Length: 592
Image (cartoon, rainbow, N blue to C red; front, side):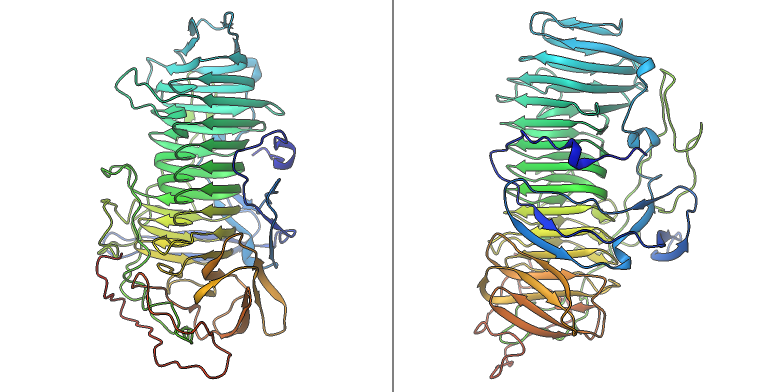
């Protein structure tokens, strides 16, 4: 896998209309010698279990994931994280990506050229037809695109449905007033690769006008699997629609993507899979959305008017849906009436979320380019086996979607995620599993949304999470978590830095949200199930003693009675109103 230097690839001239709110993290922990493999053991009728096995050295096709730091250009937001052995995860990529997905270059000896020009585009390939400002690719191959095309379009329409097409953008600029700049109508899989050092721009300036049976609504729109990789920069602006859309699987493994759109930044009907690159998104609705969302690596900086990352079933009638999945079953209220929870709450009515199906391609192309996961053959070994763990009744009875807990969810195993959202920060209409990475959520201020939201289960086994937002629907990770996680709700909004210190006064994690907040979730490998910690949030300070890995189970009532704003450690508290139900029942049965 080629390494991508994200700092070198960042386009300094890119100036989105909305500034990204990107925390500045201190240097990330160095990779430890101890590696982990995530293994799912399944049986035909029994619920499966996730087993983490520590191993030394490289085993099979393991790729070590070390978080790469994002750097802000405008908004100053501070964040620090201390080192821990759990900050580095090793997982196999074979189930999610092919070698060609991860390769950031192309075979120039097999490439044809397409030169864009308003006065007349041209191509060296007989498989390319040009009709005015529409350039159509009809056969598998590698096509290097350069030049400028106003109100034009590249169309991939291959008669061979097994065809694999690689479009290499080499300082290409395309605009369109009524449709996608790149429109994939028919192929097996398409790669959009940015040439090393290049700056490319795709712009949609008008409302979408449909010309066939497909509802085209993105600057890049694909009916088949789509991979974005490379070492260059791609700027996408869409004033009326989405950024990059795949009606199958969408993979991003490289490039610096600067996406500013009216609707969703990245959208994959079956899944969105991210394993590298720098992704800066300013979105009018969701930042990233797919039935399954995987983040293995990369720098993600998301500013969304709705959810930052959303996992939802695309077959639902409301087009990906939203749902208020985080409450109605995760134990008792997380609000404290002068006293915070004691950390002993059970996980209530939540059922264990399922594991989605991994669909790995073996990209052997008709042009002789192979993209299997081993030399000449596709890989059969795997360190992640995708099978349902269990199903069960949904805890989100108000959701208008028909999501399955086996096929809807979010996996985060690495990377740096900086999310600012007016809706839910991270929202899953199924499960949420965090194995590693560093995640900051500058969440919503409305009590109809939460910094974290999920429908069936949420588990954290590694990484660092600090999620600040409103308290009305705040939830914590569940009892299956194997590292400490703390939820604190306040009776009034606060502002300023969030800091968690251990009993020796060492800072475990800190983050400064740019908004006022009334709830904080903090999880770190350095939070144990028996330690004592000091949480400072703005002007408030609390001492927290852990008696389990989960402190504060969440607000199952979609709101709640707040006390006088005092938190533990202050004298004169009246704790009589503190309610921490462990049965998962809610007096507000619809979850709203």
